[in-house]
Image (cartoon, rainbow, N blue to C red; front, top):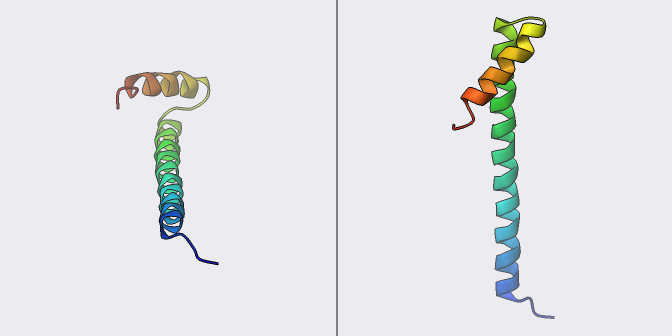
Length: 62
């Protein structure tokens, strides 16, 4: 049985793409956790939720 080099190449590229996607998702989650932690440290109680909402709205554009 012969293996198709094109199929193998596509499979390898798919595996690399999945790994890169996992890395990207990990970076986004880490950044979000760090940002929420900073807001948590600066504001306590019900003020936290108000400030978190303001922070999210201020940073929607990037």
